[in-house]
Length: 269
Length: 303
Image (cartoon, rainbow over all chains, first blue to last red; front, side, top):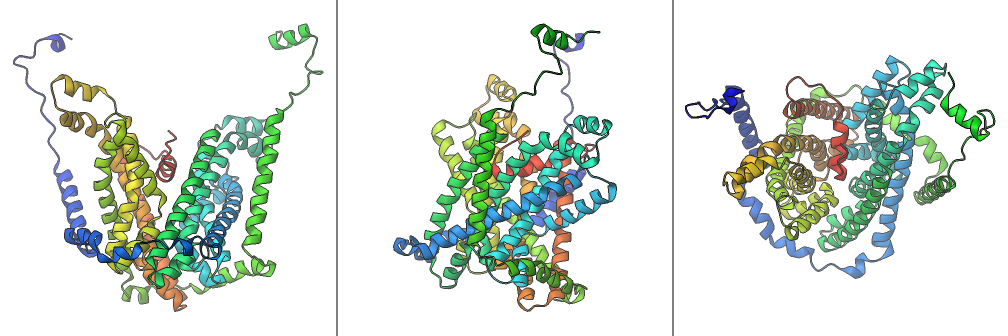
């Protein structure tokens, strides 16, 4: 204690920790990687400014509102988008409930189920969502049906990941009590774990719904139905003014839906 | 031995046997029924709108399974000859450059959006800007940029960069807002300028969290850049679309497997680096990815 209280005259500064060689090596490697990646991607400072002064931007204006604000051009495809999102959220989330319980260490009925479901779901999640869409479009034909399938698979994968981790963190004691009282596996999980994690389930379902709304907008770019189909068609014709109009509509609708969903989730969690 | 609760019951004239279960509150039940009805109506409406015939519904899993079977055995040699590894790497480069662009743009802006740094008239517009950017999907940004720049990886990187500014900015803002005020005050008490307070008071505390967000975003962006290739923005997506259009399913299988392996490897490496940055070398995985995923996509921190 006296050391601390003593005046520091004559006391030396603590030696500053010297950066290790390893840090330099890692830093240098990152810089090299970045430069190489930048070159591969075609990054140059001049191009990043030229983009914004490109005369092509004028093609985005003015927005032809009389074309955009019609049922067949925008609103019907937009409704189809929401229908895809709703159906796939429901399918994905209801399938996710039993699979998540199989995927959590706490509630898995046995070891093999746990490992198999976990590794299958990890692989499913590693495939990007539009890859699923494109695969299913090829398999079962162009249209909203394939899109709903693809999004169901993807929301299942996301939901299972989030929800099974919540179950992992659930309080094990009610489950132990139910088992100690002689309950079989499914009823004990149903009464011992489900009530504590159900609010999280609903919150995640809403969150997956938001994800699906956004994803279903772009599904049409690969032929899986929804409003993206219109964007893709107009892109082929280079009608960027129409695209901008559609995007403004999409943006407003998505923003409103998100605000509603966020408000709902705040109340739940 | 007497149970005080039972004694109280006896005193009140009720015994355990005669005591009834409490009724569930009426409001809750009504709300549940209302919610279930809304969900049901939404589902029926959506299914009818999607024009799903019953036989199509039944044949779809068979068709999907048929395609899946035809992917085996995957044609790795042919795909590697066609340069699929280079294309996967290109996707990774796009994601890296895109994330770096987003990081350099979003970090300074995040200071302007934090309530312990910026005045309210800068802060609010900044936040709305982040929210607005987040609402536009990367693919839509890419569609617009591809029209201007022409096909190529640069449009993809820029699209990823612009979109990620929204989430990264929002998360960095929250990190800055939650710093301890002590170090900044100490710098000011020593007569340091505002910028020194930021440099020595805020930055050291914020940087590890923010870097781990960047890495997390990079993981997501690898998937996104793979997808961006499908609309012509460079990377592995174009290869997948091409082989699918040729109905060359063995090649598709190879592309898918390579992509999945690369994605999983990058996820694993990045997750372990993030863990080291945040918790130090010995910490175990505590499933914090869940909270991060939620925060990344919704902007809500859960804990």
